[in-house]
Amino acid sequence: MRAAPRRFLMLYLSVILLFLAIRAIVVPPTFGEFTDDYSYRWFRGDAVREAMQLEMKFASKETCMQCHAEKVEFLDRGAHMTLSCETCHGPSMGHVKDPQNVKADIDPTRALCKLCHEYNPTRPEGFPQKFTDEHGYGRACIDCHNPHSPWVFRGGAQNGE
Image (cartoon, rainbow, N blue to C red; front, side):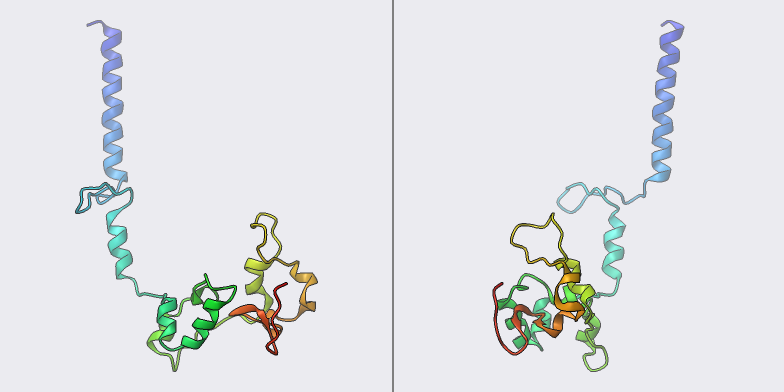
């Protein structure tokens, strides 16, 4: 074998060995471990086990329904039927475990509603959007709208506009 191909082969093998050595140091041992059904994971397997050890923070709409059935049923008939209670009320597992001392809070200002309903041209056609600075004269949205069904206005009147 000539010298040039031999040097190229040695360089090539050295790069491969260097790559494998660095990979062994950098990649965590449980990255890509196989599951019980022998499918390959593209994440660190210990990450799942560590996440399972964390304290649960979120409940579910079904959990809320155990104590707040009338509100959840009203929500399910309204424009916000696809939302979980925690979309607006935040993580509520603490409230589920200790309802007397831990309240499911909500931001009563316009800021929460603006997250979804401030005008944004990229939202789908028909999605209810407002230029919120020009709507409601600066009052909180809940002064006029029932947040569980926004087309039900205070006083019981309904409006589909």
